[in-house]
Image (cartoon, rainbow, N blue to C red; front, side):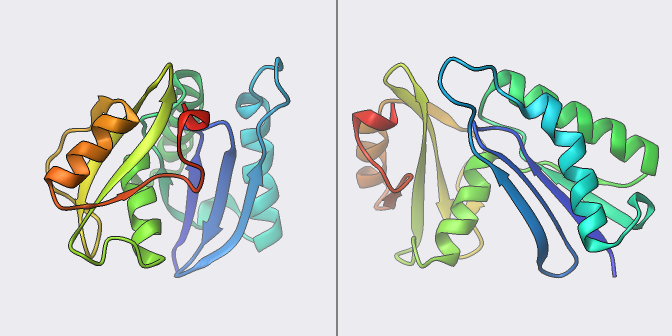
Length: 177
């Protein structure tokens, strides 16, 4: 079996997972307390090592790496993508780098969202705006290649126009922004 390493450094939480056909191990590190620097850079390599040890596999058994490529924290994305680029180069293995919105669309569709045919997923980004994209059900195939930036209201209007189910994190409203 081929092992896959999964890394998400796009958001404040740091997520790392390992699996073969299914996820065998995962670790989610909550965000640092307010007014503290993000910890992705100091935690990523030790977490990957911890996961490999927990699964009892050497790095040489990794067959591929999945890493979220954005949108998200610029520094977090640089940390994750740089780490993955170095590891993949050293191990000579392929990398898949889906958008965070597509990963969340897959997860939402697995939970039953978007069964009406389309799902518009909104990701808050701060300053009253966020990123959103439209996906077809099933499989979370992007309707177009672009990710749009706008307000929560603009995303909801686009979902209504496209006859898509609107989805964002469990909390909605200004506290997301």
